[in-house]
Length: 334
Image (tube, rainbow, N blue to C red; front, side):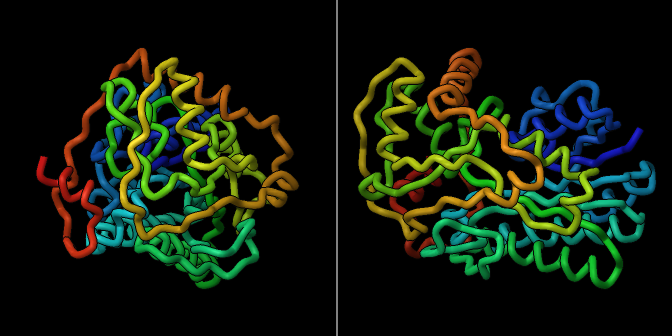
């Protein structure tokens, strides 16, 4: 029975990867510092350890205690827009934490390191986003993710550490932290509807995205550990159908069975249009029957309504106030 470490295991995507690995017959150690995740997200069949990736001393003890065959690194603070204003926090968590894991994986001869990157590495004006494009990240989060991608390539060439890199986008579904005010637009919309608030959109709402249901993403990540064709490759993973944020808002209201007004806020400095090509992942893993947006939203809405609205504390570590969107500035004061 292979033993796998999953970081960010109490979070959204990580908890679903844990489920998929257990289903595939893995022994799973689930690691999370609970800064954004919830213990009840973790499958009770996994071994849960509360710890963060920035604690290299504790990580070393964990790697010494368990003989990991595979490492699935999903822990991150994934807020693209906010990352401009929390650079030190972003790079500490998303780069240094990743390097700590890579160091231990090299020392302990891990068979394969599976890393969840992001389409944020591509930047703008590269549509559809394809794996062979040269990344041009435009925010600190995307820069951090690309730095780890480069580090994995260097560690493979220097130490023989095999890896798989996934670049998912706009993943949604059950267990997403709907109380997070800075990321996950679908969760934000659903939480706002539960609270009887207007749905807030930045700019004119014409930004285009493809929204990916979790069941179309997590099993592929789990499968990559033992698939020979995936070794040392980079894959976009997610949905193909593109929607505007305005269309998404309407679809979320339909799924929730609730209506509200739309409140347009000043546009943020962000990539306006972002969607990926998935020919490579389909060629390698097969072409699944994509869960439609309406079906995926309905499943998530049922879960959200059963759990109720969630609240998260405003981010208290803003490092740069200059050009911080007014709505976020107000949240840091609440």
